[in-house]
Amino acid sequence: MVGTVNRAGTTRRSVLLVAAWATMWRPAASFAQNVIENSPEAGPGWEPPKQIGTVSTPTATPVVAGPPVTAAGDWRQFLLSGERSIVVRRNGPRRRIRYMNHDGSVDRDGYGLACFMLRDVRAGKVVAMDPKLLDVLCGIQRWMEFNGRTADIELLSGFRTGVTNQATEGAARNSMHLYGKAADIHIDGASSALVGAMVQVFNRGGTGVYLNRGFVHVDTGAQRTWVSTARRGS
Image (tube, rainbow, N blue to C red; front, side):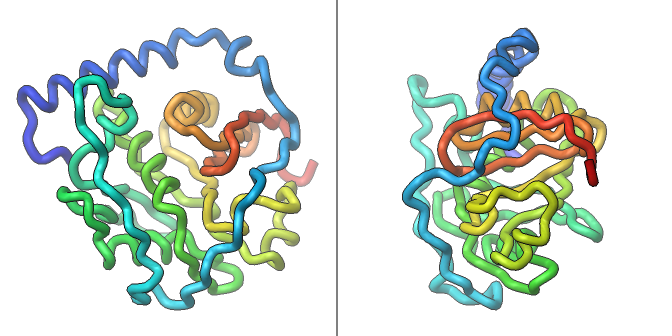
């Protein structure tokens, strides 16, 4: 996943270990201190994304600058240095998708495939997903893999049309899913509490932990955290 190892790999691993310790030792009370049950998922000022219909539309590809890699830089950006890829599955085999090249340019085919994987399956609609959302998934995956954990991400939900969102149990009225800025994920072998704690530390957006439904909501909207203990159909 990271081209060369040795010094760069060792340095990156030490950064990840510090972050992992911060997460592991965070008291449960602290994590749940600002829990918001049924918190709205949308932040202010968001515009609906451009619907692209097919994944090959080149105009759907955003311009994304490569991360600054400096000793004093944000550890999140350091974690995302080099090419960026995610290993995901959705109702099928796992796929490794590279959405950004090593030089910081967008891999158009990979980005398009990522948007397709995060499409509204029910409506058959594809939109340009927020690249920052892909960065969160990439960062969490790398973090777990560097700490010796398998981290294939199962995508449960991505973009939703208004009709699909209305038909989704417990969905917020102005959900970030509507804007191509959210995903519901599950990682085999990791509890939703653990994944949620890691997402909360890494992500600067929304984190929703659904303890009894086995998934974590991730979005790039306003920063907030909520935990739900509701079961499906309750």
